[in-house]
Length: 402
Image (cartoon, rainbow, N blue to C red; front, side, top):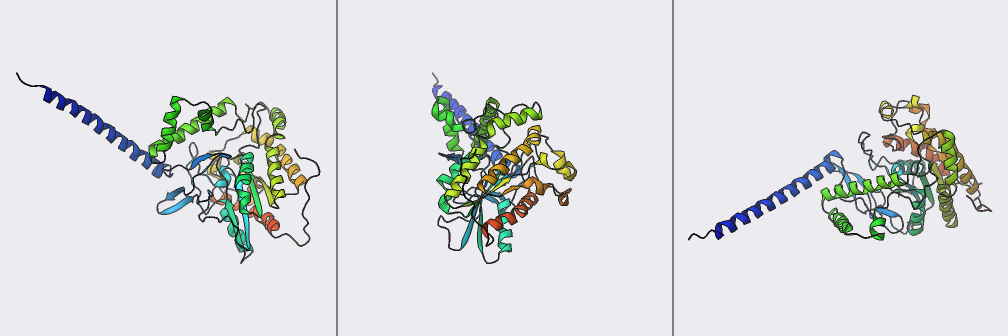
């Protein structure tokens, strides 16, 4: 009687081997495709740019880089700042140190779909332009303008950054470049800190589940795999969108009067309080400050727009209605604390820039836009760093602010 067990076992092992081959082949193809898409379509690195932070929710991964061919287009240094050189904690003698804080526009983020994909080089950010201008204005003086901005950050996250890290660097001046992320809130039910949409890990830590094991595994694999890096980025963005759908910081637009009323109901105890907290911390530590209201495409005179800007113009009615209100709120705070306020929308509406593209989407700057901001900031920053002989330091408010 013939023994058929051997051929059957060989057939089974053949099937197993074939399945394993397909699995490995598919995995390799997906990984190579992901690396190609990230590197050649999105022009992004396959490594993670962000990681968890106990105080600020998330932070930059030190050493992260994005390249354009052989050139480093964007670099995060060992300190977590967008800067090519590392920054020593102890400020070198004779150095003037300026920190530039804000969200994605200050950081110099790339635009993405549905807008045309454009990237902002390491030398084209506002801080890079401003540092060069200051060095040219006062030759022989060592000036550092350090980009500590992080995409998505709101003003209260600057507070945590100052307390936990930045004040230890002994800055002379801090520039706050904010507006788009938290100044135009119109939902009275939105809680500034609690409802921050970028809190992917909070639910998974507070309410552990079996599904969370896969999430943690995916997060670990994203350190080595472009496919998992893309998957985790998509998962976190989807979570942020869902959080925004649950409690969005902007209510549906009804009319200008409603937007203004709802904004005023929450502004005092939210972003204005956070701004004053930051100014108090800086005043207490002998650090000067400059407040900025960042430029927005919807606030630019349509007669001045470049063709590309006109093509992707998004007419946010909330921002149009609230701009004069927010500007007046900031002027009041700046006046009370004796700090300068620079509304960069004024510079962007200078007729000299007619037909010149300054933005790559609704609020993010290209290199030319960064240069315009730096030129507008230069005289203000220069006066703060090298005050006239008659300058006297303003005292803190006698009564609590907003």
